Length: 568
Image 1 (cartoon, rainbow, N blue to C red):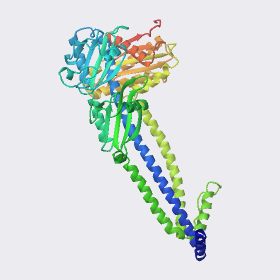
Image 2: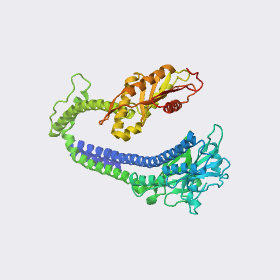
Image 3: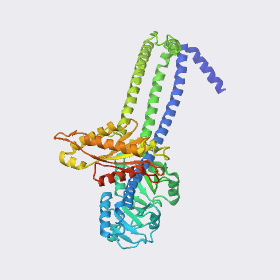
Image 4: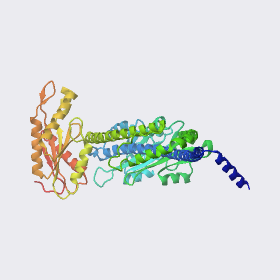
């Protein structure tokens, strides 16, 4: 009964309305429903996308902090490794403790003003340490010591931890620190002891404060937790903000983001585990980046609200012009759409004709014509920009691979070229390497100045470029050292190339402004052998040959054969 009455009233109303009014009313209702649905859906999608992006930023902040911590610790471990493997230290490890202490103090000063570095004998006794702290004491019972004798070891220390630092030796409470240890084997196969360093976390705290000051919007927090959940850096050191189950989930997931709590007090948390990888394990520090959800998601909610506001504004405008569209737009729009659809489909349809019928249609027709012209111009600009982009990429690639002063390859580019050259050549002497070092280069800098030194480097590099073949690769790898990689060469040919290089460098006069000078160079030569693991082994052997040339009087060429090869 009610439905019948409603239908009768609608029919009566339809009889009183013109066709244009009915079309306008139908279009208004349709537009209103459609636009409202699109506005709400767009706002919801935009909010979800923004929230996902913010969660990703929190997760990436934690990952970035973890990666930079790993890089810093590996650099410190590299310093210790270089010291442990140094040939000059062979007689120092078992020698005078005072001499070893001086070396350790120098290394500690370059790492951290609060660093403690010590050498522990194989029996667990501290033989020598920075500032003499803990010398002649035993650490044999510490778990890290046995691990260090077997290989590099990472540990974190909170409140004293695994081994006392110098502060603990003075009776003070040690701040959170990191422990690095590795074996020392001056003779092949014989472990003399372990080199251990305890480093403060000042650098980690400075990095944390830097991220808080630049990356995250206040109020925000970054925590550094140990593997067992103890807070190393953060508002409550030594506390355990998460239970064991949550810590286990962090360690298993490696990185991620989550929402803690509910309502106005909820917090967006990103986490990452600084555990390195299978080839380079790390301490398993857990980095936590936290920010109140109300702050983190405020931009997302504002964006969603803006979309809804714009949607409702457009809805009102649509309802206002629905009647006008019904009477005036239908036929001109259909005609215009047909002409537009023909563009690109037929041979002569490249531009819309001028359309008449109302001012709006004329304006739309003109705007579309202008748009088509701008599209053509934009396509041309994109083509030009693409060509320029390709050129810029080429320039950047050359800049990244070239030493700016000499124009030769830099170390990174050379190592890539050398790795390709060594691939598949392990069984034959087809790859040769020359290590070139300018004699008395420091004397040139001291006498004529660093600008003159740069001119000498450029002159020597020009001499090298003139001598080497087109397929050879020459690079400056640091200071006054150069390296040349050549292929399809035997020992005799390699020495002959080195002699030509040496002669070309010695005969070249270099104008340094105040005078024209000549310099000499010593050259170490070697061939790649089947036992070389990578280019580093070949460069190390060439470096040994270089020092042999230096010791024999400079301005010399010395050849060092690869192991297992007959000497020419």
